[in-house]
Length: 290
Image 1 (cartoon, helix red, strand yellow):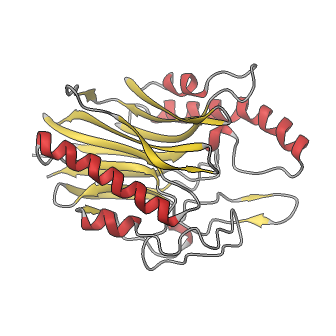
Image 2: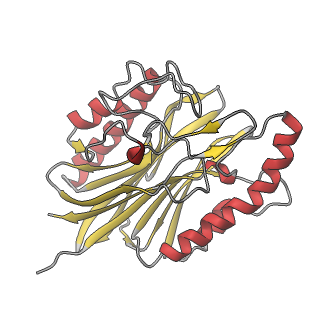
């Protein structure tokens, strides 16, 4: 008997601002207002074409209105053809965005159980990072799917955030037992053994990954991720583009799909480097529940 594959994807949408950056404050502001109208619709159209083929999509950095003349990006993505959508609003008035789970699976509603979690630590004292953990029904069983966006610059705070996430997961396990889990997201961390910078393209991040324990903590807690190499086909950031200064090329992997060890068979896993609507590439994986 063939087992049904769970198809999941993670994508940091860069607040709908596209793959590149523009020098100069006013040029950047005007360009971003224009881009914030164009790229969310491109992403939504692309998601609509995938909506019958993918079970769950985790989106990070879904921006609130950049201008009073633009549509809320969440509403644009919510209309992409998935059956339900979860929206976790994080940040502050200075930088507020959503992490979104789009799904074709039936939600499982558990009493007295939080779905949305604001993570400790803020980016530049403003933006909160977030974690969503939601139960769904798949093949007659309950699974949990997480969507996360971790701190981009501080490896210590990132590790603190992962410990917080693992505590929330353990609380759920204490209530409901061990359940198969998939976590989607922009982890803003590189895997152990891979280069930690500084990098030539994108943010140089000379100290953003040094001493980071995020993946060690996840692995010790029973999560796994497919093997990655320090090679172009595995990189998710930055996307390939050319600006006034230089050609930007992908040079690191920050976006991952994690699964609980022993619960899932990984059938396929790929970085979609032909999708250039953001400064990150999406990651698509297929899993079979054991």
